[in-house]
Image 1 (cartoon, rainbow, N blue to C red):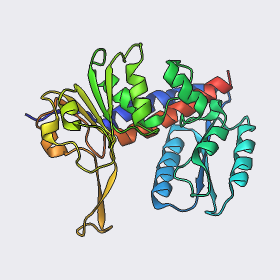
Image 2 (cartoon, rainbow, N blue to C red):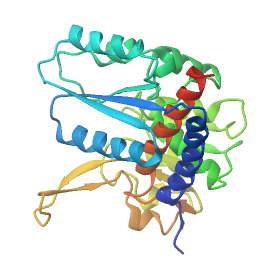
Image 3 (cartoon, rainbow, N blue to C red):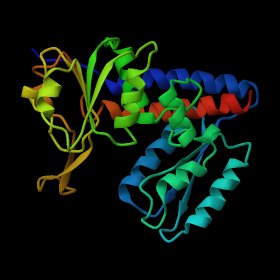
Image 4 (cartoon, rainbow, N blue to C red):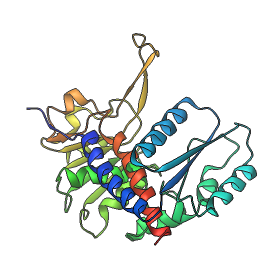
Length: 294
């Protein structure tokens, strides 16, 4: 029997509707939420990601601008641009698109964005608030989107055994922190698995929920999934494919066709986590605007 499909595109549309309503309420007060995207260099994936975010902002009535900087832009020059945006009351959200060139320290740059405008949720203050269980910080968009997928799909979380595959700062660590909080829609028992973990398959087979963000195509096989478990596929992996016009195709961390025959619920890839990341970014931007204009 095939698993229930958790439709991230549909759930994201619901969230966009909620965000659009908040934008309209702000506009009635003469306020327009605004976000600035900063892209350094011409990484093709970054170009595509920022373009999608910019397009969605326009669709929801959020003012967006993209600053495209030369690959050789210095760290000091980037600092100066961020400082100007920090001081601009008409800008409510700032997103510096990763990856940055090797000569620019990403975490130092992320830390230079005001926490109140850090709609990507990477400033140490927002990370600290997440770890402490505070609700007034901004959460990183991808794990926040996964959390919303689970909540809105009515996947039980309290007491659930969750296997998070991947310990990165963007997904794995914040995801674990969200789910283990003593709070509504949390209280899970979380195991974080990574490249040095032993018996990964056995840990996964005990899990009620698997969140795969390990960066290896089709890593999660059907025999790693407990019957009826929920499987969330976060992976975006480039695999050579001579039949594709691009010479490659994108695939997730989960062997979807096989795992969907065992799982109780599963996300497609694409169409699962990806749309939720942008939905949460737009939601964070509007909340930043509401906070700054209160």
